[in-house]
Image (cartoon, rainbow, N blue to C red; front, side):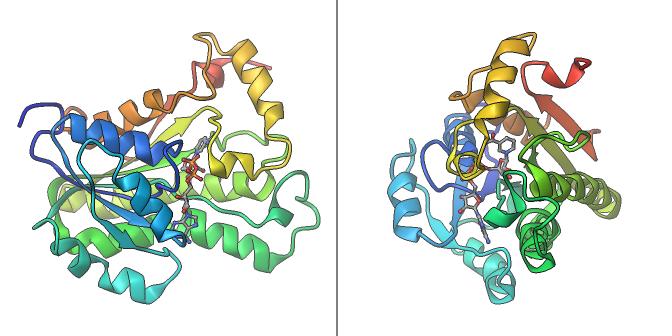
Length: 255
Ligand SMILES: NC(=O)c1ccc[n+]([C@@H]2O[C@H](COP(=O)([O-])OP(=O)(O)OC[C@H]3O[C@@H](n4cnc5c(N)ncnc54)[C@H](O)[C@@H]3O)[C@@H](O)[C@H]2O)c1
C-alpha cells in the first residue's frame, strides 16, 4: 500500500453525514493507504450508511464520549478490527441550544457542563481510551474553531473550544514522553450538521468568504481534512501542542 498514511491504523470519530469533516478525513485517509475504524454516536444506522460510502466500507463502533462504559470498552472493540492504532481523530462537538446563538449570559451551568463534557473533556477521554493501542509515533488530532477571539453566536462553544485548545497542549505535555503527539486543526466555517445547529452561523459565513486572503469555500471539507492527514502522518514528527489554521488565512487579519 502506498500513500501518505500507508499502513497506518486510524480511529476516526465524528462521522454523522458525508458533509462531516470526519467523513472527508476517513475518505482521504483510506485513499492514502490507511486502515480506518469509525466510531458513531446516537444514530448508528445513519453512520453505518455513510461508512459504506467510503472507498473501503469501514467498521463502526458505538461511542458516546460521555459514556464511561463505552470509553472503557473502546480499546477491546477496536482490537476486533485492528491490532493497534497509529492515529486517533477527535471530530466531536456539541452544545445545547441555550449555549449558542447569543445565549451566553443566560445559559445555565448544566448546559455549559454538557458542552464542555462533550467538546472539551472528551478529547482527553478519547485519547486515554485509545492509549492502550497507541505507541511511540502515534498522533491524536482534533478540530477547533479559533478560540482566541469572541465570535458572535458561538458563545459557550467558544469557551469549550478554548478549553479544547488548552487540553490539546496538556495532552501534548503528558503523552509526549510516550512519543505521542497531540495537535488541532483550526478550520474556518463549514456547512456541516454541527454548524447548522448554531443559530446565526451564517454571520460567519459571509465575512469569511469575503475577507479570507485565499478565499474560503463553506462546502469544501477537504482542506481541513488534508491538514488532519498531514498531522497523522510521519511528516510532523517533532510537532505537538500545535494548532494549524485551515481558514483561508482569516485568522491572520486585523479587525
Ligand atoms: N463546521 C464548522 O464550521 C467547524 C469549524 C471548525 C471546527 N469544527 C469542529 O469540527 C468537528 C466536527 O464537526 P463537523 O463540523 O464535522 O460537524 P458534524 O455534525 O458532522 O460532526 C459533529 C460530530 O460530533 C458527534 N457527537 C456529538 N456528541 C457526541 C457524543 N456525546 N459522543 C460522540 N460523538 C458525538 C456527532 O455525532 C457528529 O458526528 C467539531 O469539533 C466541530 O466543532 C467545525
